[in-house]
Length: 458
Ligand SMILES: *Cc1c(COP(=O)(O)O)cnc(C)c1O
Image (cartoon, rainbow, N blue to C red):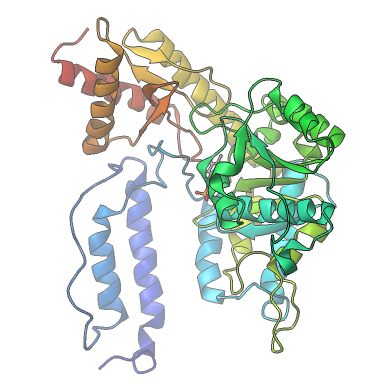
């Protein structure tokens, strides 16, 4: 009967087995169908007696034919990055070392690496070096951290320590953003007790009059660097000016758009972000580290940690680095990938992705049956299949059906959205493996599936 101690001689063989499985997986990843198979693979009752590590791993690998090849080069949906070789290796080591990175007492290794990783990320994004930062599980939790800091600042303006006292007696929190606001920022507002529906959406110059209308009362503004349908940006430099003039905290969601900072070709889109009060981005998107990883940066550190205080007699300090207590040392992968490729490596990757997005955008424009629906600002291309002679409703129906066909087909993975009331595709290019072949294949597959569905080839 295997228990972990009795079968400890399986330890190294288990890792060797994983390495062999990785070798095969990676060899096939560039050409693999994105969803190789579907169906139920795992089930049955809890084993009364286990079969040991090797048998368990073999079953896991056998069932991984239903694993989405989302770290491959042809996964264009959502905004999902891959895993650089350095990040993947470091992530394996993260499990090996198994550090609890909540404090220097539990892991000097993890916390030192996190400090350096945060400092390097601030440098990478050209944000002021004296800002504070923390690694999170993703952009949603990073939005939560930035907006928790904003909430603390806002209540302090009213003379209240909201993290100790709560909201009792305080007015509603004025929160402004644009139509580009991501659902995760609303979710963070909900988790913070501010409410999803609190956000007032402003268009054009409306932010200025809205803030002026508050007569100097503090407010929170959520700026968006990278809309998920189009890759477009709010006018952050202008909003930073307005925040300065009208006593507002500017929080910027740059989950993927913050990476525009890495190249002079796109940096203009995010100008002014260095004047925000909190800024967030994702690691598991364009940095290409494995799930899960995001970053939150906060200008004034006095707002970053107090919301996450956790005091107990047995703990070394009540200062915790974020919403978690026990936490994975996700800094290892971030540190390793930045150490491996540096500023130049990341700039080259981002510029390649912008060129690929431009190539895709031009292919779309050149095809009579494709219609681009938004300007290509960054790494997302928003378009739809548009054969002649169909009504808008028929086009929506066709594109929705093609969205299902393309997943069924499996050669590329791209999903639909609704942009300005039209069903559209919005492939995002963020994976270090993606090349021209993959982008070209996306166009070919969509045209082929459209032709099949319409029964004619134009
Ligand atoms: C992906 C994304 C998020 C949410 O990120 P998670 O890592 O999934 O939590 C938030 N904002 C924007 C703009 C995004 O693209």
